[in-house]
Image 1: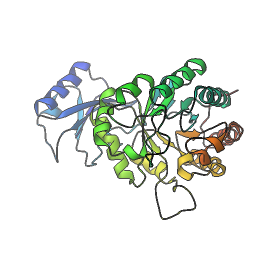
Image 2 (image 1 turned 180 degrees about the horizontal axis):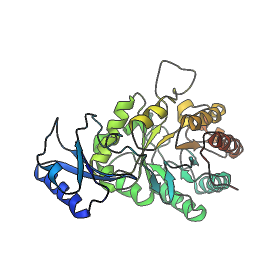
Image 3 (image 1 turned 90 degrees about the vertical axis):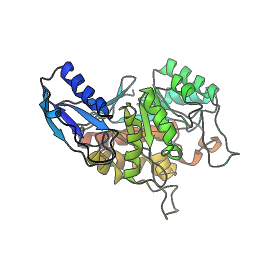
Length: 341
């Protein structure tokens, strides 16, 4: 259910509607928009009728939402949502580029790459301090030391940090350092983690699972938003198919489909999506053309010696060429890529 309020409604009217919803055992979600303020209702298992809502001052109409991902849906929030992370806006006119190493390996490595990607136009620094890996023998990250290195890079460059949280045990620690919490593909359906992240009220980058459908991705976002955290950014990072000539199949169909179904910003990870550094730039161009609100790109100063995902990592020189290309594409679709010298 969605309760649409009149433009001139008062906070008292909004609270009265929320009170009635709570009294019926449901949860209200106040969602302001550019054109209207609406109150979503969750907690019901099917069709719900709450008497007298339309009689409350300030209520314009009551709409029954049939989508299983109610809060994520454009039925509830028709306008695009802009999620702001430490002053960086996702979902507006600017295409936001996040860049950095797959894994934090050392202070020298991160500081070098952070300075370079900042100079070339990245708006955020990515880097994994905790690395959930397929093999238990692969590099698992520097953990707290890695977070401290990322924080030092942020202090010098001014770039906000996006880094992965892999479980509820480390969530509090990671959240104390990160500006944007990344839920990786392996954790997209870790529902306990999604609920805990939803309680934090901190921006979340939610990556699509390796074999997840678009509906499953939207329902994962719904888990976060159902806990009251509406600052969610969706990420297409490639899915597993029968094709084995690339690491994954980057599903660029997902960009316009997601933006049609949901009001949330959508970013694309072409590095994981294709897994071959020489093909990352073409897929980044295509992602921007398809309407992506951002890109997350892996950059390493010496990819052949990288401890994680070297084959898909760009050098700073290759990243500079990518930024030139995506600026051109962004201009062609009435967007822009800010930052850089």
